[in-house]
Image 1 (tube, helix red, strand yellow):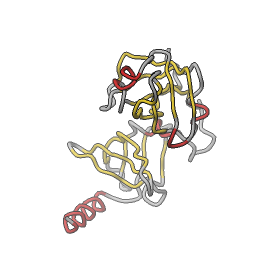
Image 2 (image 1 turned 90 degrees about the horizontal axis):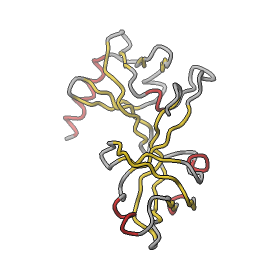
Image 3 (image 1 turned 30 degrees about the horizontal axis):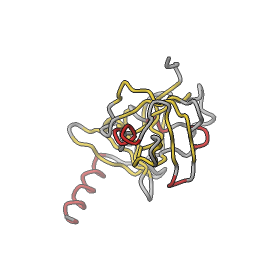
Image 4 (image 1 turned 90 degrees about the vertical axis):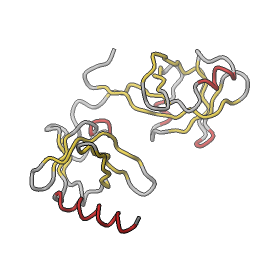
Length: 187
């Protein structure tokens, strides 16, 4: 049962089968693999388009080795079954702290769903995802029918107010228009 301060977090993408007993390779999507991949943990299986399935997988074997990590599940017993879950995602319910240690302390999952505002107080849109990109994280903001990406850096996003469910940018809407014009020149 989901507690008040818990959330589902994607922790891995399932790769190709390994061997004939149902083991699979994974791409780790967590910075705490030793905590997330403990024998007996139960994962929700998400389809490649992130829709939750009704299937729950129980971890029965684990060999964490960075890019060569392997997992086994009690419900997956052979290579054919392992192939059926290839490219699916594993999500795990985690407990969020009841209170944050300081104003800059939050979990990424707490940001999703927050409203974002420009420096002048005008609403920009809703945070729908936090993308972990090679050079920096980006906030994906649903703005009308568009989705825009804002680099998640202190200079552009100085205020993340979890208790009031909002994010405040250091710029106004004019900044987005100038960035759109630069993007058009680069195309």
